[in-house]
Image 1 (cartoon, rainbow over the protein chains, first blue to last red):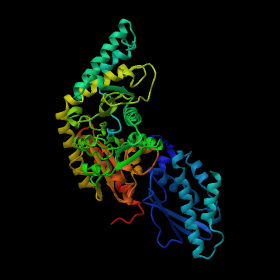
Image 2: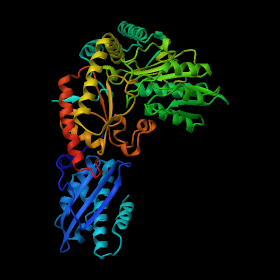
Image 3: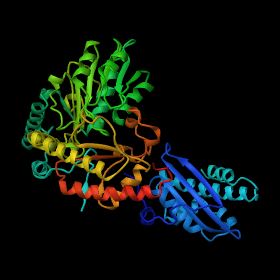
Image 4: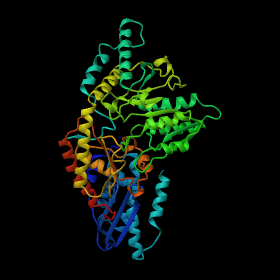
Length: 143
Length: 386
């Protein structure tokens, strides 16, 4: 099996950060589904334009869990604007690399978080351009 | 503690088998095709191994073609028989929906060459019903291929009945019996098989050696040409240590068959009973009764298979999702789709495959940790757990 996860990825999988739900989240989003084999739910609390708290739930493989774990760890405390700029390449880099066939996990985690931010902005009428669509385009261009 | 529960992926080389192989890796290294004395001695050892294997599978020694493994053997039979027996009308190949990728991909390659390929559907228990073959077969069918035992869910097919139907319509019959050793008595004549394929590393032999049992009366176009070894059916220097190992391993597992089957059944039943006791929302995939005693393929609701595998792996428990071969392509299992498993559950399955070295202590250890693994992963699953 050619799935060589880094030690950091394994650590995040075995001891994921920011696991769970948030009651009355300011932003919430679900991405993926059971049929595709991975799903993430993100919960956000925003205070004074900053990500005060973020949590997630996962139905997914080791890298699905690990990428969401490191992403939430990294964006907690950032401004919403900064969090929106946190891309999947940074997630992969932070984990010390991901097997090729697992890179999509990092893309999905980032998209899920962006979707939760979109939800927050929509609820608070801070709608500008839809972030998820822009991210998707960027990901396609990269390939 | 390390618990290896992935014996359907591969097995540990049995020390007694290694002991028999050793001389052929060291002192007796001559090429079995050489004319000189050590070469002739090597050829004699090869012939003896061939005879032994033939006796064990109830066939003729001259019908055995040693290969690099079952993938090659299955490629040889499927493509070799189809290509050599094709005519304007006769161009159909039928395989079951449960076949290993090496059979399925061989058939799909033939489809690209213009052959008509049909798949026999499985029922929800993972059984290929003879009536389902009857519906597809006709006089234009060259070959029917149905595996004896499925690699993922361990279900046993009635290959004798299926072979009979194939022959009744003038088609040849092949069975990939890789997962059937030593669970079934593989008597090629009694079963009515024209072709049968095996791989040594699935039964405590070495990796890199397998065989195709062939019916010499049926035309077969070789895949690998060269120095004319294996009577022209498969060129390449004889892998004598491997072949000696294959023969020794096959002999050994059939000698120990009765005791092993008893032990494996008891251990597997105990394992399943404990899992059901300790872990809610689990389900067995495939028939309970028509399956080999070493296999458990279990659906764990609300969590993903690879996560279970990786978590268990960190605790020294080694299992697989679906089949090990698909671990890198990350697609849902064809077999579980073929038995009609709910789409929502296709990614939540683990195959446990027992072997001759597993103990009750290992099963207890595995259950204890499996319980924790499932509990942990379910604790943060977004799926509403009833």
